[in-house]
Image (cartoon, rainbow, N blue to C red; front, side, top):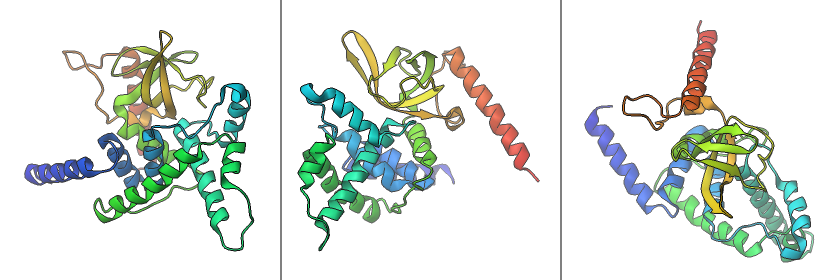
Length: 263
């Protein structure tokens, strides 16, 4: 592809991202997801993370029960997929509720039993129709779905799209953000707490009580970041030695894997 064509493609993508109902970074995540075969998972995650209200309720008098029931939707490697699991459960129950001749039950009561915010879930459901229509009619993304047995492609799409929101493990549940170069803790309710994953990608860096927290995090592989642009010093070398070592090791593993696949 020559430079003129490349610039035209980039301009067209920028125009679509500007028209997209979600922020451009989430358009990028959906675009990557479409290429990796998980477009609809990324659509759902984009809307869930963009929602002004959490889909999980934690009433002050029932926080322990709410936290316990949230684990029924938990994905051990991803808070993003935990959100998606809860939304998918709601979608399935919602469909059953509307099915002619199906079982009769109160959908709001089901949500209340699992401490789910039905208003937030319904808002995401309605936005999903709009965003899916945009993706198919204007962006021309196929509505692909990942295998329910393997959500690796979703984590990879998040890693690529949110490469500026990455952090490397420091100690315990403390990570060091790559671009801000600051220490932060996993959020207390994160599925990743205690996992000591080498790399994570996060949606938001939040300050609370004098501490910084990584909100909505997913464990990722260093191999997915070797092509990403990381902060560098004036001489062009990576700013954080630990990041350089990790990515150098990942590149070596990639070369070894490619060598094994060669005829």
